[in-house]
Amino acid sequence: MSCLLCSELVQKNYRFLDIILLKRIDSLICSGCQSSFSRISLDHCKQCFKEAVSGICQDCLYWRNKGQTVSHQALYVYNQAMKDYFSRYKFQGDYCLRSVFAKDIRVALLAYRDYSLVPIPLSQISLKERGFNQVQAFLDEAKLPYHNLLEKRASEKQSSKDRQSRLATQQLFTLKARAKLPQKICLVDDIYTTGTTIQLAKQLLYENGVKTIVSFSLAR
Ligand SMILES: [Zn+2]
Ligand SMILES: [Zn+2]
Image (cartoon, rainbow, N blue to C red; front, top):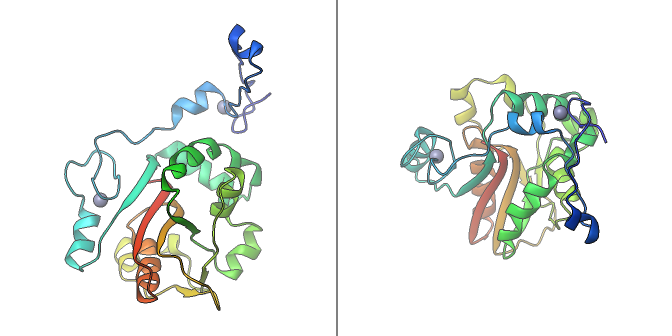
């Protein structure tokens, strides 16, 4: 099998025991690509998993000063390899790439069994352009159930805004009509940057009676 990212042949080192047990070896990317991604180490912001922060990061302090809480978990550092991955997956719309991190996502989110998983939606325009919601595709591939409770209004693209205007964004989300809200929600996104998107979704859900909200993203 060739690597999903660079087409290099993926070496499969079957151990005798794996063959006996018919254990599936499911590495979808080569070891070179694998090593270009960096798992967030234990040395991270206690609230949002920002790498190389002891205590609480600047973004979380900003939210604390606004009276908002952060309870976020992320798996990978948003480094160059991750940027390149998302550029192919999202902006070039390479749907196959949804599976690269499916196993990591499944393992991490199984810890949130008590929570309803709610993916951050795309606006109708972005969904039409891309053809798929990259977060839902992650969850589908990870075989995790989720609830589409939110809708996103059409707005200028987040990535075209600078940091300050991202932090000050107006509400982007609305509730889907007649959505019955669970008590505990884990919001799921692809990339956590400043936390604005998550905070807006949380604000709306809290206003509508949800009791506990945490969040998760693949990259931070
Ligand atoms: Zn590769
Ligand atoms: Zn933080």
